[in-house]
Structures are given as C-alpha cells and as structure tokens.
Length: 289
Ligand SMILES: C[S@@+](CC[C@H](N)C(=O)[O-])C[C@H]1O[C@@H](n2cnc3c(N)ncnc32)[C@H](O)[C@@H]1O
Image (cartoon, rainbow, N blue to C red; front, side, top):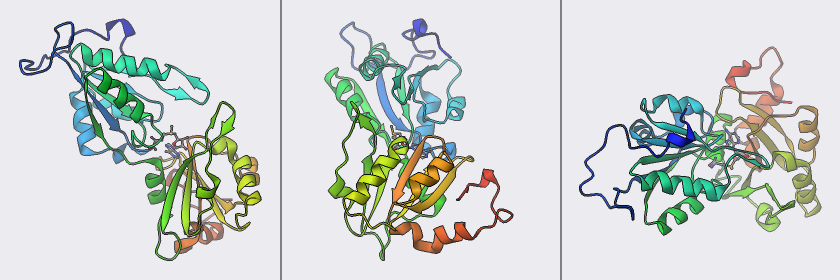
C-alpha cells in the first residue's frame, strides 16, 4: 500500500505524453476512470474494468470494492483506500474529489474503483462534476449494481410479466437523521422495490409502508453480502421481516427487496421447504428463516 506522501510521484513507466493536455503547471494531464467493480463476487467485474486495473498508475478504492481485485494492479501502482463505513467517512467526499484531480493533475492514469456501479448510489455524479470543472478527462466504466447481482444469485427476477412491470431503486439511508423516501413510488402497484442502505432502518421502513397501505402479506427479502460466498437471504413479508431480522441479524452490506417477484419461481417456498439437512452449504448461499 502506498504512503500518502508518495502519491504524486511520476508514474512508473511514462507513456508517450506528447499529445496529451497539459495541466496549469505544465505537466501532462492524466485521466480518471470511474470504474464499477460489481458487487461481492470479484468475477462480476467487466473485462474493460479489469484491463484498466492492470494499467492504472493509481487505484483509489472503496470499502465495497472486493480487495481481491487489487491483486491485478501493477507492482508500483498506488493503492489508496478511501472507504466509508456507516456514519464514518475515512476521507470526506470533497477530499476524494480533490485527490482524484491531484493524481490526474500530475499525469497519472487513475482508476476510481467503486462497489457495484459508480452511478447507482455511488457518488459518481459528484466526482465527474468535480473533474469536469478541473478540465480532467473522466470515463465511466459501468459495473453490475448490487440489485442486479443479488437478483441473479437469489433467482428473484426484478421484473416479471406476471408480477412486476417496473423496478425502483430507493435509498433507505438517513441523512441528517431523516429518511427521504418517496413512499408513493415505493407503493406503486405491479412493481418491485429495492432499498439500498436500508438495513438498519428496516423496522421503520416496513412500519411506514404498512401504515401507508402496503398489503400486509407483501413478500419481502433481505439479501446480505449478495453474490459473495457468504451471501445470506432472509425471506418473509413486510409484516414479519423486521422481526425475523431482529432474531437473525444479518451483516452489511445488505439490500431489501419488496415485491411479488420474490414468490415467482416458487423461490421463497423452495427455501421455506428446505430442511436443515437439505440446506445448501453456507458457502453456497442461503440461510432462510
Ligand atoms: C453506497 S451504496 C453503493 C451501491 C453500489 N454503487 C452499487 O451499485 O451496488 C451501498 C449499498 O449498496 C448495497 N450493496 C452493495 N453491495 C452489496 C452486496 N454485495 N450485497 C447486498 N447489498 C449490497 C447495500 O444496500 C449497501 O448499503
């Protein structure tokens, strides 16, 4: 890992910089790639993202990007952790933006590696904006967002001709102590709702949904550490899922999925029917209560 003091050294193998833009200090400008690492399973990263990781002079990475991916970095690549934990930012967002600009400003090819997709609750928009203001080239490389990854590994289809004609991604996160959920959107008929960052607010979210008219038997699932070997899934209804979670706490990161699609494919029933002897190994995925 790189000492912060050495971050602005020249890249290990200088590229042909003759045609590149110069920074105000006369140095050739580097560039930034906002790269989605995909969710827990490192194999879900794209080929393009992998190539960029292998070429980067600096990788600025988050807590949710699987650290195994850093093994693909070049030997002298700067590996800079800027991850955040709930209510605890190791580096404030404006300083992350400034760091990216500074690294690119001294000619580096910078990969900003984020869990999932950079533009889904990933603050990618803020980073692009900052880099654009500084005149720094920024390319977005999409990643598989957690909802898509978890849908695949749990076999919960987010849309389905018979059950859901729309899917909505909502943040269940609190800002300044308050949740900013558009409840009308969450309660749309014939749709699936995925709440990101809602694990610790599950009780409040489900109570509010019921109070606003959500059918009490609406299927609800919690998927923790989705797509990773340690993935765990809890299935219930909007009425009992918070109580189930209280009895069987799950680790973060976790997604909340609400919708009739949870019962499509007989998925929930299949899990409920599994005897403990027949249950798959923990490493295979499922823990259902
Ligand atoms: C700050 S958001 C980042 C989302 C990310 N940009 C994406 O596209 O997946 C973090 C939230 O994403 C969800 N999340 C990310 N990875 C996950 C995973 N492997 N399993 C379940 N949820 C995950 C959780 O809700 C977590 O609180």
